[in-house]
Length: 453
Image 1 (cartoon, helix red, strand yellow):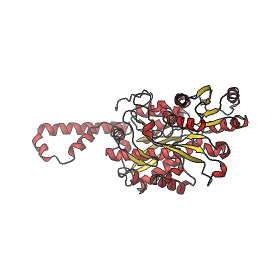
Image 2 (cartoon, helix red, strand yellow):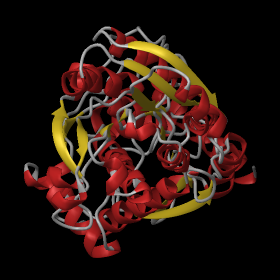
Image 3 (spheres, rainbow, N blue to C red):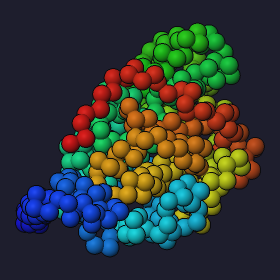
């Protein structure tokens, strides 16, 4: 508080001094005005906002990452942390790979070194909000990122909007994140329920048949409900019918009652909306109940590492939507750079949770460079400008009206174990979806962005 008060006093003194000079010597001041002076004066007139300008003083800037290191989405949270670590390392080193994404990035961001802090959000909105608030108030964080649960993501974007701090989701599948709960300071890099359901429904109808009867397993929170809603909408347009929707709590261990209810229907497709450890438990138990012997499986929004957790035998033939798959490197040199850098640093192939974390930090840094400032409003406006960047999933930009990225993503089909070429070769790419083709029409999901200040 003392630093903020001193800064306010200094700004007021500068404003008064300029006013006196302007009144007493306007002609002289005008004749001596140097190029760039007007821009500097405007910057000086901006009042402190969020953690700016205190957070941009000195040689370093701080970014706060809220990642789910415990809870049902911990595998994805750990993968996000690795994505952030790789991005920060490359940005600070001025890695040449970044030039293909952002030609403006050199070494650091505006010459400053990134320092990154991590906190476990525990897959709980309150925990995530507390961590983000500490990062902004105590560490002067200029950007917050991270989420796997959409409930956490929506809570974070609301608190960051209140604090005038740019926030980027890592994983958030709910329609509401850039729909009715959208925020001026919130941005989503990745695909979400509406996009993946619109993309996968016609593929599922083509591969599994038009007249299918679907049973849903739905986690009881915003992601689950909006994904099931969108999947029902788009599959029913393909001739499918919905025979049951079994809603379960987040983090459920025992799915027997839900699976018995499904077994008592004539469903021939299991649509698993469950995510992370929930999806793995549900599919394993569905096999034990004998459901997979008579039902096909579709996972419209598939979590990273589900295939490893349940094994190739259960995933063979399963259709899934996912934000990224490492074999996209065969067609995209930027994806190849990302996969190779990740594998060199961490071993193994990256999944979409690492990619979205990586992209969030890189695209924030690019926006700062384009804005020429860390001032939060300038950064938000730079992100809204529609600048297109080449990324590991193709060309990408944010829509100014709802801050949703028009990202491409793959629809995958699980391979038989005998067809796998290596330990990570779980999927064939059925189609890489053009993100622009499956974005919801503007206004459909109820987004109304608020003011900048």
